[in-house]
Length: 113
Length: 114
Image (cartoon, rainbow over all chains, first blue to last red; front, side):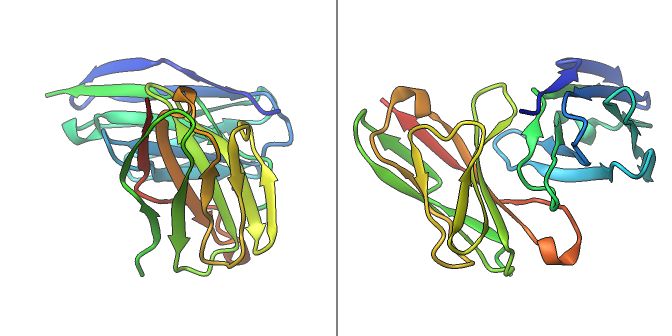
């Protein structure tokens, strides 16, 4: 089955700096790669996603890049703010509707004011 | 729309007890899934359904049963609870017909098995 590795497990940045989280996946059939933000005690919230026919996608301060050849994808957050502090998860799916997600282990991002 | 709802929010069971975690969605989504999240880890897929009457196993199905008799409901049953099933359980749904892949997660059920 699919295996998703995520690094780093913790990341501390100063407010205003950029943060980068990286994930690798094992199944070349994976075609959907979402990123979730999870605050303590809350449900995961989708922040951005990308499909395998696109190499990069951006939404304001957040961007995701995908390298299908190397089987890795990354989340980039620019101009970080204290409210960006949370746990971020990457995931991958081989299904035709994005369900059946395989998640990475998570990255705890701390943004220091 | 209420979105995806889950009951109960918290539950404590003794080893060997059975219970059903409820999940319902009012968005007419075809796809529904159950995940568990252990402390400090990502979510793992337990079971999923692509429509009423159709279910299949995910990554960690042992100890759990599901059924999908209606589009709206997707209950998860623990037949004989074990301490290893202590976890937070999330239900999710998605709308295949729309072409969007976004999973809508419920608020979760925190289960403790003693």
